[in-house]
Image (cartoon, rainbow, N blue to C red; front, side, top):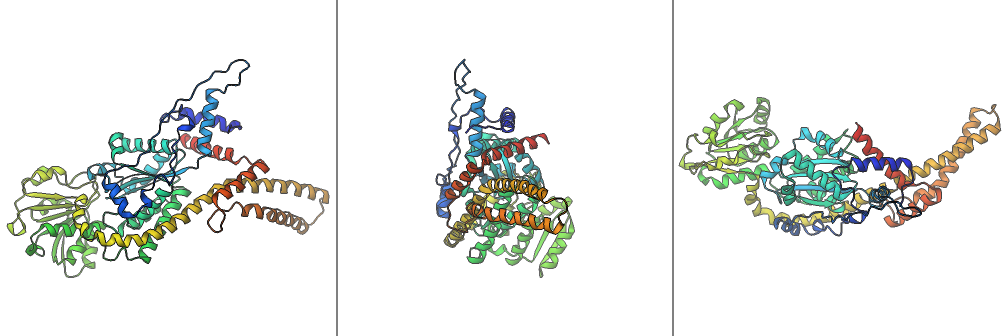
Length: 549
């Protein structure tokens, strides 16, 4: 296909020259062919997928770049210039391949907490991150899902390979982790597989604690924060909103959440596993942080028979609210300034704050008084924060043991098999919802043609109406004028009804996507709508305007 419009050619040339990260001499034959049939780990049973992650196999996007031959024009020759070849190659890339939904992720299944904590993005920084991601040359839309167990970036990419490359380099730049190290641990999923993955995440099937409900709230928060952000566009927002529907439906129609534990409850279970049983109700408990995670820790400690605990928090209001909510438990508030003093008097310390730097280092802990033998003689630090609140150097102190979110696998392993069986029930729901989402996204393919066709028909209608009214003279009444206008609109709408019906691809009828696209291309040819060029113009215009802001 040759780009025939001067705007598309000029803007495409500008975009090509701007793209410093992309190899502009790569031919279109080196595009990544990543269909959902090639990336199938998420279509397998959930157990098989866990095994894939555990074996450390990472799905990568490999591209073998081939040099484009640069030919010079010769008198009387028909050689195409190098610039024209690049324009044609880029036009093919942007129009023959639909923009792809891609997830670049690192999770508890593939990546140690030491790396995840450096990549973590606080919720307050999500809008900034989305803006920066959409400023990349080949990224149209973006969203960030950053929790204690995962750091996943969802994007709509004009080019799969270049999009992944740009996002990975951005992650390296913002975290300080070398790109090569990120590539060792990341997983890449495209289109249908990316959709199914987010649906499984929202349903709690991909969580360390299978079936836990907190992840659904975190997915909802992505949508809430994304409202009003330009880069949180139609495809990505539609994907996350559908994921919320899936998460709710799975929990309603299956018993996946029955008896499920959360990260906080698993942390309490782990601490009790490490303490001598007689000391479970007498050990001195300290909880640092009274946010959502800290509150759950407090509730689970109370459920396990703990009747007294100290809670360190920035403000007393949250602690007071928790105290009113939980009866029969003595909850003592202490400010952050007394954190080390409280740690010296505790047998078990739970940390769950949003601090980006460690609260405890070796120098803070080494001189703390020893704990009694009735609690095992070891002070336990159970850190469920990402980034971690307890530095790894604390583990060098002989009288201390530290545990983080990665150590919770020991707790959840016992009841994981039972919920894995329940998870299979959810897979049928996820498969059905994935088809519905893909049908909705497929329907977007024909939107430019629908708009062009309607605009084309409207131009003809308006021109013919003007001719008709001018022949009728200036003295016609408003009522007559409106009747003629309504008549012309009615004829146009009735004539468009058939073509519009054949451009539908929303899963409501038996028409396949290929049939719909054939109809679309036929209409493009018949009415010279040039939708492919229009799409190219729109994409290039959007990226150029973005870079000029």
